[in-house]
Length: 121
Image 1: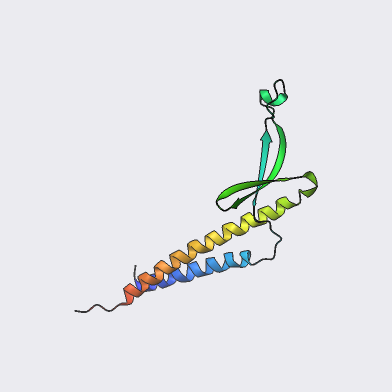
Image 2: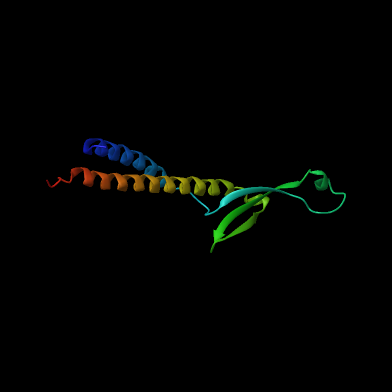
């Protein structure tokens, strides 16, 4: 790729990254975890769940702490936490997308430097 095409690509990626940064900078209440919905079998013989009609739904917040996943049960009166978990999930995706853009931009800057180096003859 020639230097002018590399510059154009960098400009486009920076604009895309700026849009994502604008989203990530919004003020939102967040909980650092992911919303999980589970249906559970109780294990009692003769219960409806033994035939596949499980109990639930039950709601949890899933977090990773020191490499281990922890589930925190959410009682019915705290269901408003779901939106805060979804905000965290969106924010995490935006940050990952910005990192992807940054890596590609860095690679293009390296290519640009190589394309601009004058060859010794």
